[in-house]
Length: 405
Ligand code: CTP
Image (cartoon, rainbow, N blue to C red):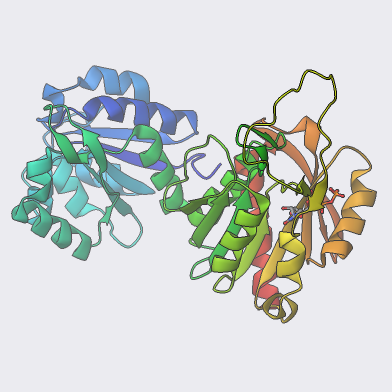
């Protein structure tokens, strides 16, 4: 949503990672942005302007002497009215040119000529690990940051040259997420948010257990949206197979009791607690040390259960939550009568906001339909992507905490 109708300048300097820039361009265009590609001479040795023109739907700027611009100023035309410049890949050579303020080729000229107050400059470095750790590169990185550029970091792992280490360019999807973050309003700047997500798994014996169908997608979307809004985010995740949103601190847990301990460790310094996890209400009273075996008699094992701690209810009953220093948000997965159950559950949990949904119609999916319960009544949020719903919820939470705080 945030990228709809945005004007993004995508700069490519020379590096093997240019192939990832093609994918990044596609993602930006798909998200509704208008993309102006600018390529250095080095970049054109790795990927052609034709490819980037086809993907962006616009002629690529390759030279400051491009006569197709009536005023002969492509560096001014491309940056005025732009929302953001991202250089991906940003080579070691380009970095040194940027650090020196070089203006003798179109890409660095354009970065220097951008209105720095309104047009953010994001750099996605890409280079060999030795080049990355060289003191000159590290010095240039500090310099460009001091000059106002935002560094997106690098990946670690196998490099095109065959060596292994730091310096690989981030993946297109990661850079895409950083661009979204850079353009998002910082509604939760300075806030610390603790979020639980996913199911819990309660062991019966070393090979079996009880869990539920929660995929964790809504909780991860909330973590991503909170981070994009400028919050420092602690995400406590049950067993899920989802990638950690960028910039989010993740702790993996298995059982409800482990989740309760992890929450206790981070919630005291949080401003907002969001409980999206589908915590198992009960666990087997005894976890068998060895696998429970069939004894041939046809008898089934008798399982006794114990209630798990109610994480949300106990956080909501804490003095910080009671004195509005900690804003608590619960989620409710119901199988029907959502309004009735949601209202009752919000009161029972003692939280200012509860977000209800019909579990079986959302588990594992990328979309959801929600009802938000607060003191002001109920608000229906029609079916939409979990990412879009999460940003709307984060905006509501920011608004409510602003009013309360
Ligand atoms: N929750 C929790 N700890 C538990 C159970 C639930 O923190 N032991 C939180 C969930 O993360 C969610 C909210 O409480 O934010 C409601 O969870 P839900 O499973 O819908 O409700 P329950 O309290 O378990 O009630 P019921 O199963 O009877 O509907």
